[in-house]
Length: 148
Image (cartoon, rainbow, N blue to C red; front, side, top):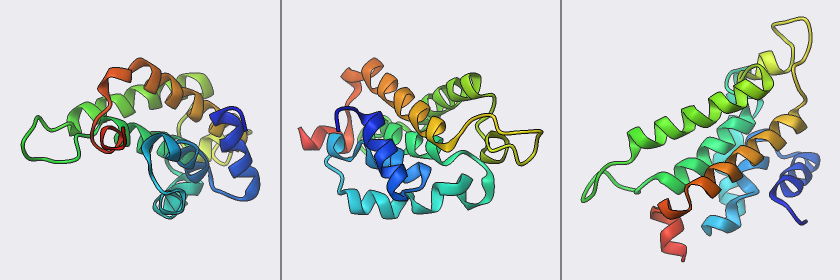
C-alpha cells in the first residue's frame, strides 16, 4: 500500500472500525504495536459505540495525542491543554468539510440522509492527520521521539 489513506481504507474493508482504521494506519510512524492500537481503539468505533463523535475522528485524535503529548505531568510543561486545542482544531476542520463530526448525523440517522460514507470519513480523518503531522514536524514528543 502506497499511502496512509489506502492503508486505512484497506483496514476498514477488512472489518476494522473507523477509529481502528485511522489509528492503525499510523502505528509504524510511532512504533506502536498494531494489535495494541487495534485493541485500544475498538471501543471508539460506531461513534464511541453510541453514534456520538465519529470513530474516524477519534482515531485522528489518538494519533494527534500520541504525537503531541509529553507523556507525563511531571518534569516539563504539561501538554494536555495544547493537545485539546489541536484535536478541536482538526475536528472542526473535519466538520467544516463534512457538515458534522457526529456519527449519527454523518450517517443520516438524525436527518434526511447521510452526509458522507464511513470510507469518506476515514479518508478525511487520515488526510487531516497527515496535515497535522506535516504542520507539526518539529513537535515530535514522547513516544514518537523515543522511537527515533
